[in-house]
Image 1 (cartoon, rainbow, N blue to C red):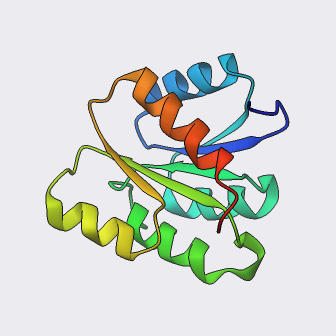
Image 2: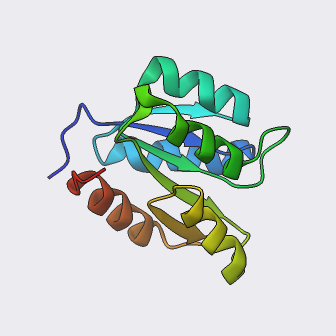
Length: 128
């Protein structure tokens, strides 16, 4: 069962999606922060210290793949879970996301129950 103290960083440059995800995750008891760019995501990760990052791939300037790579390279972010959430669903892109260090990959559009189930699964798995 999720602890209310668990923090999730939602990174999406589309405000409607970010706000919808924030509402959904807060309704499940998570503490949520939002970033709309890759650089903002990296800054938020350093200060907010999330256990999970829900990360869009298509972001301005620094894309989600690069954010994922930088989070994995940062010893301070050891153990953070990364869920890529994107409209880019080709097999090669999914493989790239996993290769960059993502724990899971969900394509848009998605069912909210599937997203919540994946979030709960990732947070329940304590392996890095």
